[in-house]
Structures are given as C-alpha cells and as structure tokens.
Image (cartoon, rainbow, N blue to C red; front, side, top):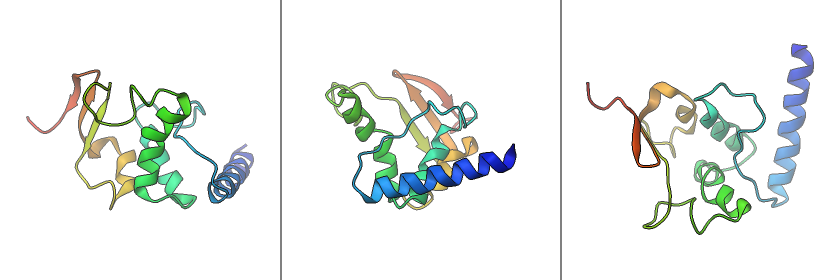
Amino acid sequence: SQGDSQEVAQLLEKNMKIAYQAGVKMAMGTDSGVAPHGQNLRELSLLCGIGMTPMEAIQAGTIRAAELLGWDDRIGTLEKGKIADVVVSKKDPLAHIESMGNPDNINLVLKAGEVVKDIRRP
C-alpha cells in the first residue's frame, strides 16, 4: 500500500542518514527499481536530503561508485585514458542539485563517446 511505501521510504532515509553521519562510504545506485528510466539522477537530491553536499552527491554517482567497485583506475573521473559518460545540464548542479532529476534540464548526454541527447541545437 502507499502508506507502507511511505513508511519504508522514511525508514530508508533515516538509516541512510545514520550511515552517512557514521562515515559509511556511499555510492549512487540504480538497482532499487524506484526511479523511472532516465530519471535516476533524482537520487542526487535524495542524497543531499541525508546531509550530503551537492558535490558529495555527484561524487557518490561517479568517483565513489567507481572506488567501491574497484574500477576507479578506469572510470569515475574525467581524465585522459578513462571511460566516461557525460551529462551537461542547463542549471549549475552545485546550486540546483534537484534540477539533475529533471530530463528537461539535461542539455547533452554523451555515452561511450557518442551523443545520445543534444538539445543545445535545433
């Protein structure tokens, strides 16, 4: 039921906040099945809701995730020789992290070096 879902969400948020405050390393994940395809960046706002700064939330989806997978020598940062997908937003995510969860805010997406979305040009 919707009431149960809200209760579970509140419990998850509480536990995430406790873990974050205790220094547990966290990475953004897409395995919970709660966000529609193309909207997984909404998780960045949720991470800020437990106390992370916008930069920490972005790093949870990039370098921290790579570190936890043991792949930070190949992915996780924009560096020569690393594989990277890139998302370019209209708004500054450090000032408007919530905008990252809105597909209309995303100007450009590069995946494996290929442009998969580009609304900068008509």
